[in-house]
Amino acid sequence: MTAYIIRRLLLAIFCLFMITLIIFFAMRLLPGDPIIIYIGQSTQLSTLSEEGVQKLREEFGLDKPILAQYLKWVSGVVRFDFGRSIFYHMPVSTLLRERYPVTLNLGLEAFIISTVLGIGAGALAAVKRGKLADRIVTPLSYVGITIPVFWLGVMMIYVLGLQFRWLPIIGYTSPFDDFWMSTKQAIMPVICLSVGALAGIARQARSSMLEVVRQDYIRTAWSKGLSERVVIIKHALKNSLIPVVTVLGLQLGFIFGGSVIVETVFSVPGIGSLMVTSIFAQDYSVVQSCTLVFAVVVVVANLIVDITYGWLDPRIQYA
Amino acid sequence: MAADVTTNASFSESPAKVSEWRRFVRVFFQRRIVIFGFVVLIILVLTAIFANQLAPYDPYKQNLKIILQPPSGQHLLGTDPIGRDTLSRLIFGTRTALLVGFVSVSIASVLGVTLGILAGYFRGITNVLIMRFTDILMPFPMIVLALLLAAVLGGGIQNVIIALGIATIPGYIRIMCGMTLSIKENDYILAARSMGASHVRMMWRHILPNAIAPIIVVVTLQLGFLILAEAGLSFLGVGIRPPGAAWGAMVNEGYRYLVRQPILSVAPGAAIMLVVFAFNIVGDALRDALDPRLRGTL
Image (cartoon, each protein chain N blue to C red):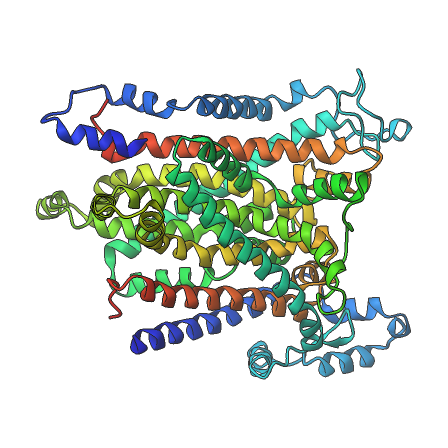
């Protein structure tokens, strides 16, 4: 098992290395000279001379060869130094430190909700196949995977926020500052973030559970006279979880990816909305750092999934 | 449902011979909702083709005298903040959505399937290179990768198609590589090889036809997903550029006038949902109908 974990860990590190390459060189293809944009954004610099521009270019390290720029960036990244934001005029690491707890908080809430509810609803629909519960869960899961999250957000803002005035329509408050306000503000974004993953997990859980309840050992469990609770929960549910765990990693990536849209809709100051505004501001270092953060989350999530998988299913060989 | 049929069939010694096509149609339309999804898709494709004839007004023509009009006999869905007819824009949006969906799915599936077959067929260094490429693209959440690419390329319909195409390639490679590996184990592959079939012939005539059914299913399901992703990009403003008619961008434009004229956001969102729903329903029905375990059964 240890060797298996180490192998997965090395693979993850290799992945992260390649990701830094892709992100860095993709960003260098962006149209527009960052220095010219920087000058355009600040009023006292707009009358800068040619030498002044050159000096700024040197200050940001943009005059060096591209490989040197990459190495400088990566060696910074491993020390949590992501460079400076041209738009926000502060270190990117400061920006990220402010923003990532927000995305992480909403994302993890959405992940927990969609996992628990998704597995529960899916298993229930499978056990009560064709009955009322199934007839509610299955169509709803279709709605969940087809609804555009930004539209769901806009509709909720319209109905819950503007018509009934039940919930605040934008913003974010840390639960440590004002728990009640934070919860109220989080309800709509968390629903938007979780709806797709919830539906996906429910569908996977349902079909996997349907597969398991047909197995011989379930029939054996029934014929031994075990109670329904024991058969369903101990024998069926636990075994049906294995394929569900594989989609959890994907769904986590899906949730965090969704934060790009959801945070923009609800003006939540997280990594997702930061990435979108930075794209429009052509703020290189921030966009590449945000992308990196998203990729790291997914790589780590998949690493955890791989390890959980090995632990859940003893048949898997670690070779 | 599918599983029950298999179990029953395995009891009879020789399953009754039925027309493959009739069985396909029967399983495909088994659920009534599929008929709905299928009809919706046909209507949408026709709408996209005949958008010029169907749209009551020019979707790009601004008329500042009739801004933000409520739905009426003249403008069935009202007008937007610069006086364009919402229904006409919705109709032309169908064209954008389907165009982006079909073209990007074609790019992704052709490239992905080709790379996947090569990786599975040749193993060795080819496999390592191709699979590492997918490993690198996989960790990016799809929407983040598409956003990054669209930003790099600079938006516009062509670049959105490229961005979505690239972002969805890895899935096809994974599936196709796995299927190629398992198909290669069959005796008929060994037979073809021993008769001297070339590598290209092996891949094109023997492996691809045996893997095409699952790929068709993935393509159909992906179409809905791509349309959703395009709408998301357009909503964020990095997708289809104004004045192009895109549903996602229309939801965003209507967002600011939500209280005054909710229909501006409601209508395009409902359209997106309808399309994606239809593709998902049809995709699932295709999966059941193409399931090889059901072949030759009633």
